[in-house]
Image 1 (cartoon, rainbow, N blue to C red):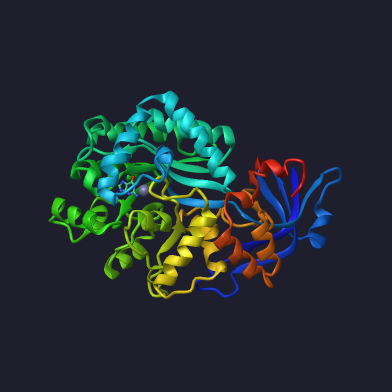
Image 2: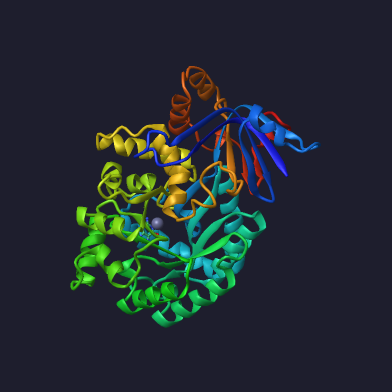
Length: 438
Ligand code: GUN
Ligand code: ZN
């Protein structure tokens, strides 16, 4: 059992559509037992539920929210963040496909998985939908580390049977069999869940996409995780590879890869008709602004994505290593700026939603994670608005919780993560916070 006290924010709905969605509790108490929140609310109202002898960890100057959810990231690209000079396809060929070959070595995968989880937790990210490499052992390395940390994670083996170096290719049959075996081994083991992961349409034959669709049907509760409509050259390539399909999204639709728990990274250039289809199928789009800017892919239109006539489920993704930061706060910063470039002022109530409950809704996991609510898993992050002298100076002037959140979303990063709780226990404590400074 654990108890944490401080200023907490949460959501009871989607602030893109519901003005009453935001929850702001200036002095809150969060009690959890067995990894699940058993009480949450104003300290004065909830403290009576504290059993004798349970010590309260008080963060008087902090802002506490549900753990951040990264809806699209590649752990095997941790070592190539900031690779110079290319847009998507060149970047894949020159950097990514070289780097991912190193994950044939399980010891290397183990070492990078450890660095990756250290980074996630130091950034307040408690759930990440993760691309591994094509090697099944790279998936073992990922889930083994997740199991050690007790995190709720989603991941899978990349399926890729054309248009990449031979060393990275599987076949339609082997990718089906390897993925099936990994599902049997890891899906719903503890908090881990499996995503069937065809990399993107250009690196899969129709036979492989068909196998992925069949496997998804056979494997209830699993996810599909892929990329769509990130870059205009990529879209033209998909048209030439699948001329019989109506467009990029239709390739996935045709093979049964759209639906609830299908997570599509980017979707920068989806057409209105395609967005309608994402909406109808309940699929989700992962908005990855740091990546879209870094690779010059384009500007995601959040206002189109959240069109009340056909809203898509949207979460935020870092897309490491095309993305440039593990920080979901920095991802909010860039999401705000991308929205500004489209003349849509996205407030901090909305960006924090995308980073927490919006991500959970996108993943169909809102019954488990994404907000501070009795019955949900006790994953949360303690943010320090005084983490740096400048942040302290600026935060001091904030006149509302919304303004404080906005300042954090624009200026903060991992330095402002004082603690990350996973299943009710501190899984990360910022070094200066270890003796109770925060
Ligand atoms: N499209 C296909 N593979 C990738 C990848 O590894 N990163 C990004 N950003 N886009 C992709
Ligand atoms: Zn990606």
